[in-house]
Image (cartoon, rainbow over all chains, first blue to last red; front, side, top):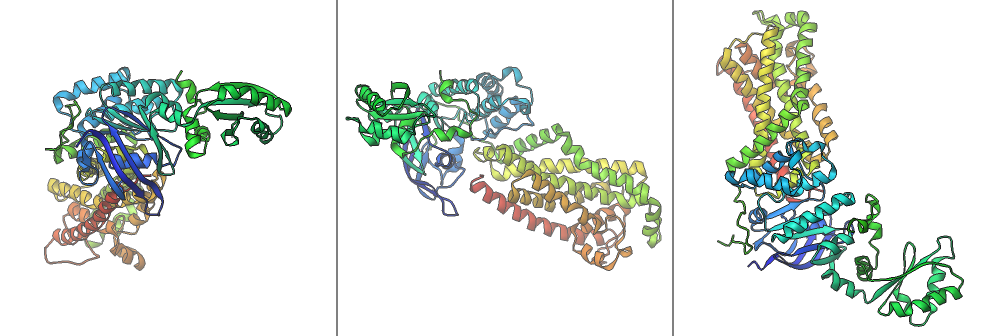
Length: 333
Length: 289
């Protein structure tokens, strides 16, 4: 065993109330990969991660992590993984150093290596100068980094990160991304979940889009974008202008535009087409003929949001609504 | 061994021995309780207030009420064992608060994904709580002595009082952990564990002999674990059989109180701790959210 850090076959998780949180999930993650689960709240990402990290028992299927069956050998799995929960999990009464030390002791890091390991992780998490301050006084980003550091004390070959950057400001998010990329480059397999398309796009080698407990598509960000089938033409319409349905009718009337390729967005319309560049003029003319003013016009490559829309029929945008309002897009630039 | 992982990393931790797991968690909770002055003083504050106020306010009246059986006992001496048990009760109530805090802070999950033995984790936490109870009862016993309480059985008796405090605390520790697991909410746990303390204390032999109380209180007190804890501690303080709810004469002197009291408390501990362990295991297996 063991070419795969994760080998899942037909995973099912049904809660006692009958909710099928995860349905028939098959997944292989090779070692060294930075893999992402992308999906909205309640899609089953966290549930899947909890099964992989032995916090939940699967109700069906077989799950091997680092070659160990999660049901039969949970302790071997626990020994060889790091896990960072969605909610920041640190002991606020302890200092940064004590938090890391506790984790070292919990994982049985040999005493002789402990001091060096703690210093190294404090350095990596950029907390060396506040090492002996109580975690209670830390900012959200500092707590997250400390949390991540405690998940790495035993140098696990595989680390699970459940929405590692949710609720962080863009600067803190960037810093955490660098940190994850660094440990991944050092050979650690990383499996993360995210609601942020940019995060998945920027960090992950491969992504599974998960929706209603099922994996709807898996691939590299580029492959997934190719799935969308072309480039995207965004048309920005005036907010107080004619209603968007009339605009959609107008655009659909243009030759070469397939009605099903037109989506209503917050700002107006977006049209997906392999010939997005060529049909632009037709679209503009159709709108002008219908007396609909156009404020903006842009042809772009598809994003993962487009992928999400294409495979699930839903936008991911509303997912960020409860976030901190900062656009993850800016965070990556 | 199939534990080899093909990745190049060689530093995988091996986990600890069981004793190691207990020790790691014991240390964590000791640091937390020292760091958190509220935990240490907060649960001691009320018993100290009771001790000082009750002896000062009711001392005169109460001394005559307890003096029924000949020997003159000061109310201070009479009250200290009850306050010792109250201290154990208050400290035990905080145990569930610690657990719910861990659940809320995510430390519960974090510990569950570690290779530590679950039993070791909770044993370590419980031992830290017991250490605290011992320290607090020592403080109460010392304070009582300053106020005029005298311990007829000397140092062995005081050690005995500490053991009573520990044995007494277990069932209530288990109870407060059960409340924590059921409510999963810090405030509810604080309220749930505290709301019982006062009625339990007053409807028992803690503050006055049951013989001077109305019949219904005497009836309830016979089923109240506090009566057994207080009677055991009091027997050790006074050096005589003080239990009235169960009359035993077979063992002689102090043992006529200690044997039945410990029998009742240990039985209660087994039942409650058993229930708490079952619930903790269930919580550890299923989703914490």
